[in-house]
Every structure is written in structure tokens, then in C-alpha cells.
Image 1 (cartoon, helix red, strand yellow):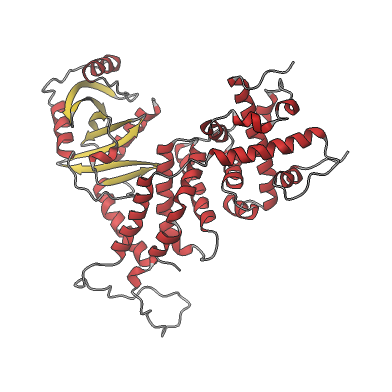
Image 2 (tube, each protein chain N blue to C red):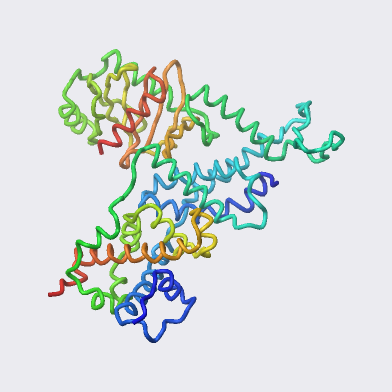
Length: 184
Length: 275
């Protein structure tokens, strides 16, 4: 069992991490992200006695954030982007992916940070959070599995599919912005 | 040719397993592209940091909780009853010597009690308290009463489009109008350093003045917070009126009325949804 002073010492320093995740979930909406972070920390304070010392506080906070976000979506009855990934992929066959991505770093350098975050925000909820936790927060797959409440194997395959979906969206952006020509 | 599953490809992206020689060319490009996306995605968040004010609010909320849990005055008696022991604890278990008030369960109970008091005052789930005193509240209630009395430059108008045009002409701000509310009229009212757009609408719960300002809701120093989903509204009661404010599209919309806070939040959300 821990007290509130400990909460300030060990949880509050992760405000940045929770805020970044909130930015990812809200698609870069800073006002909404701030509200989400406040509610998350309030809940975390209330539940701090259930936190096991020595375990991953960041993962614990991010789990509360995720659950808070899901509650928020339920409350608003906003389901978020629900277009199935495979269905989305069907619409963009014009670019030869092997050619388009043969120099991936150069292609990706064309994007501003906010464009990458926006593309991430278009992914379905579970994919977005899984990819964020894995690639941005750098959590272990075990920690991601705990936050997302799914088996580790699911995390691996979901991360890969999420990144593939992000790749498709970035590719579509690149076409729209003229970074990528249409292949005949 | 061997077919690789997503899980195996993911392990290659994360460099947990080497890329095998027999991996087809397109899959090889895919794995490399995925690695590049992984790096780019991580980099996209490098400059994203929580605003200092947000961290301060969270930190002060934690400190406030400590302050609530630890009575500052020695004249305040400690709780007469001991904290409830686990059911399985033997009856002779001594009460811990440390001050139980500093522990979470007690704080949680006090926090709930404090929240309940604030629920009564603002009518919704309270989040963070502002330590400042209220100052804008008398001006806001005066504006609402002037609108109700249709005095001092109030224009009785029912057409929302005409209201928007009139307010834009008088104040330079074109406010958003909630769908479904009955428009009663508008006025430009003095608030802070300039004239601000206000309009009066009727909802089933009563007549509500909407005042639109540029400044952040925090500047109003309304001392209550009401959470609606992930959005936090600033709220208070003053002189028989209820006041709620929220940030919408870079402007602060303030609702003033005798109607319940929740009804006014519904109105603000309709304004937000109409944006």
C-alpha cells in the first residue's frame, strides 16, 4: 500500500508519457488530451493503493488512460474510425508498394510530425494504442499485452497489422501531397 | 517458398530475429519499411510534452489530497474510530502507529466526502479546484440579468444568422449558435477590456445567456469542475445563477442561467457539436 506522497513522486513524472498517449488517442487534439490526462490521474490517485510497488507504473497509468478513453467513447457513443483495415487497403492499388517504399526513410522524411500523428489517429482504436505503446513508448510486448489485456501473440500480430495500416495511410497521404507519383 | 506469419515479420522488424535469406523481396522491403515507420512514428512524438500548467494542476491536486488527508491544525481531533481492519485480521491486531490519515483509504474517503460537498455545489463530478477567488461571476450574472431584462442595447431577434451577423459587426466575433435552441436576442456587453458577444436562448429548463470571450476558461476563476466524459467544464454558482464555461474552437463559451449545470453543459456540447 502506498501513500499520496509516493504517488506524486513516482506517478506524476509520467505526465508526459500519459499526455503523449492521450495526444495519440485524440488525434492531436490538445484540449481533449489534457482533459483525458486529468481524468486519468484522478482515477490513478483513487486507485493508487492497488498499484503494486516494483511493477511498471507507466504501463499501469497507460492502462487507466486506455480504459478512461474507452469509457469516454462509450459515453459519447463515438466509435472512432471503424473502417476495416483490409477494406481500406482495397482502394489504393495504384502505387507499386515495393517501389514506393524502397527508400522508406526518404519518403517518411516528407511528413511533418503532426501528419504522422494524424495518420496514426485514423487507425482503429486497438491498433492505434497497441502501435503507440510498442513504437513510441517502447513498452515490452508483455507490458503492451497487459495494458491492452490481450495475449502477447496478439500484440505481435496486431502491431504488425497496425503498422501496415499506418503505412497505407501514409502512402495515401504521400499521394495526396504529391510526394509519391502514381505508378502506371 | 516459406510463408511468414505477421508475428514472425514483427520479430524481424523489432530485430529480435534476423531477416532470413529466403525472405522474398517484397517481404524484405516491407520489413525495412516497417522499421522506418517505427522510427518515424517514435520521432513524431519527440516534441510532444505535457504543458507545464497541466503537470502543475496534477501535482497540486495530489498535494491538495495530502492536505485534505492531513489536518493542518493540532486542534482538529483525530478520527475516533480506527480504520477498518481486514476481515481476516485477528481482533487483537494493534492499530498502526503511523497516522492513518496519511494513507490512501482514509484520503479516498475524505476525497469522496469533499467531492460530495462539491457535487452539491456544482451539480456534477468535481475534478480539480482552483485556489483563486471568484471575480468574473458578478459581471457574468449582471450580463445575464441585463439580457433577461432586454435592456442596455439588447436586440430582440429570433434569426440565428442575423444574430451572428449583428454580433460580428459589433464585436468582431462570430459566435456559434446551438442547434435546436430558441433564439431570443443578442447584445454586445462589456467584459474585461472589450465588448463581447452575448446571446439569449430558451431551452426547456429556462433562459440561458451565452457569453463568448477569447480568454481561457481558467481566467474566469470559476472554482468548480464538472467532467463530462473526457471534457472538463469550469462551473460555479453565484447570486442565484449557475455558470458553466468550456473551450470551443479557440473561444470560451460561458453559459449563465438558473437552469441546472447539466442542462447548460448539454447546450455547450450542442454548440461544440455544431462546429
